Image 1: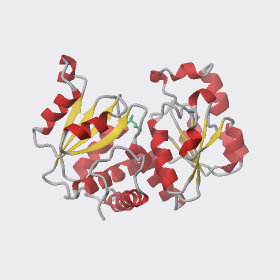
Image 2: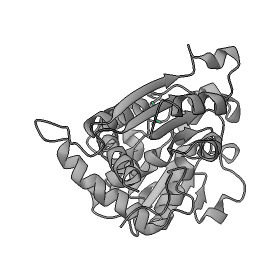
Image 3: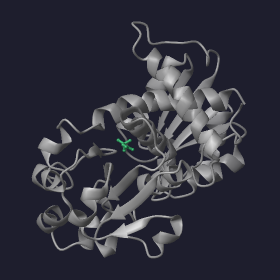
Length: 305
Ligand code: CP
């Protein structure tokens, strides 16, 4: 059964069967990553351009590796050092890249909606690798894959997303995906970081971490985005850590084995203490590994449409 959409722009409105198909397909590619030769041929002859207009370590390398593992030819584009600095528009840049017979474009952009716009001006498939504070669909897919791998299911699990929900594309995509898959989702953070009326997305809102912790299966801890002026949303980093930082003492008080996730990059000892980030319940590096398999699944499924 193919995916319903020819692009992956977000998880808002994505049907459950598409989410299930991507997660199930990723299981086969995860197995490929354990082989001595981690390369398979499905995208042989296809060309994929990775257009990054914002910094990235995990997503850019993960897509590039996924593309190479599927035997695609890969074009790397970063806005720094490109003709964007000479005033070339996004549309012209993309159409010039596509003119080189590119089949698919993976795009990260600082502006919300940029990949959606791109999908209206080029013929090829577009994959959103994170747009502004809007969506980061492959991050949410790899998060869901990792939860399912660790806990065996998504349905009826309680996932709490902690931190700056208002500015987080990771939170938004996770909420859409997890709700569609039947998980219970809550958000926790200071009122300045929780969008008004977020309950309409089907999530519970908490402001006191210690109240919700004894009831959660998974904590997905968000980075405090200091580069987006998040520091103005709470009195000090020390205070944020005291109220919302995930520490071993806090988890022990909660009295249950909570799975710890973080999309990266981590501000150590701000949103997450180092011993928790590297501790026995952390699946942060599994998220990174699973990200390659999930992105292979997305590329494979879109290319087969
Ligand atoms: N998780 C994530 O998007 O990380 P990067 O910004 O390093 O790609």
